[in-house]
Image 1 (cartoon, one colour):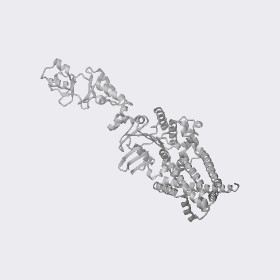
Image 2: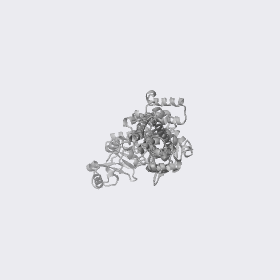
Image 3: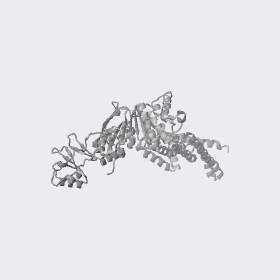
Image 4: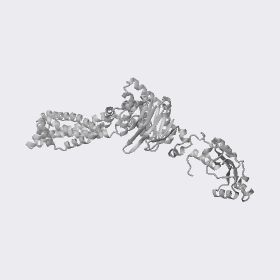
Length: 201
Length: 375
């Protein structure tokens, strides 16, 4: 078990890096689809189509571009994480009550000010639940990284499959499940702190 | 001063504003009213450019607003909406300070403003400033909504049915507060409502709209007394006359115009027949030039008349007459002392305009008090 820790850390790093990139791109695309009316369908459909490509096929295609290693799995995770983040950002922004948008406009807020001061704070819970979903999904998808030469907890699982050792499979799988539970719990905590007092419940 | 010049707006086929031209003077409380879909809200929203007209120009203090930056324009105009629209993620203080902050006031400047304004509506700063809107009652929320609109001291405040969602008691309290604040701070307020009560209570000037046009723009008194369109009278319903029962009512308001008139040369039997047909017991006798001569009653003809005589012979001249423009009160006194129980209303040229009977007087009074009667 002593040699498991570096794998866990690497796994976590891969997921977190992917999550940060996905949040940045996903939230931006979500805002873009909210702002630019005719882009929303194109963006959401693209993200949905990406989501339906089988893991293995997507990773293989990415491998052609990025080669073997962690970069490829990170790119794959980013692509999978985009849909929940874009969609929740878009829906969150859309569902801010129209009278609040009207009030913000009538007060003399620019589009960016409306977004930062009113629309994003109010859609934050939804955006954040999209991020949470993406991170938890990424933890399990990251296991596939072992097939394209990336590190992480995919390795013990793969070895377990090859040697027919349930014990080995579990040494890889259990940490993934535990990480998912812990991350979910921590993020819920963070969410509670970040969601504004006035908008809670 | 706000000036509309030939402002039109369409959504697809439907024309919402039709060549609107009018002017709002500084410091006036102007109420836009009319049936739903009349264009009142659209008119309001063109003032801060939330809606851009298709054609025509709107001037504020002589400046064409289409040439101004819309965001800066809106910061210089207060805005209150029916759904209140306080930002739930901001405290009361932050909500009130929204526009001052957008205008980059330093905290030393906006914080005293927030304190003053909260004082203005009797909500102590320490108790309320750090609450969130969800912790306030509906009435308190809309008070904050009004204060938010006033925070950067805009000379003009737009209010779109601001009290529509409040219960009647709260609404009344807020109406009074807003009217008081408006007088105190000398704001120009443009206020949309569909509630005539509210309009009559608040307005210096009422703009009555229908189908994208202005039917009448007048003071509440003028509107009550001389509605320019049947739709306005209908809209006012019970209000007609309630506010100013004594104001300038004249004999003309009480008379009935369908009266039996005949020349003095008419013969007795014919006149009796006429009176019976109309179920009245007297009629007015006219001179040859159609001016008023006197009256003749059924009783007099019956007791003194013979068939074939001219009614002019039995004519009485003791019935009081009043001019059309006679004050209502004078008229009432004459009616009260009239032996015949009615008075004759004359035009300036002494021709007969109508009659006031105790019944017609009572009916008119009733209408003045309680609005249009059914029959």
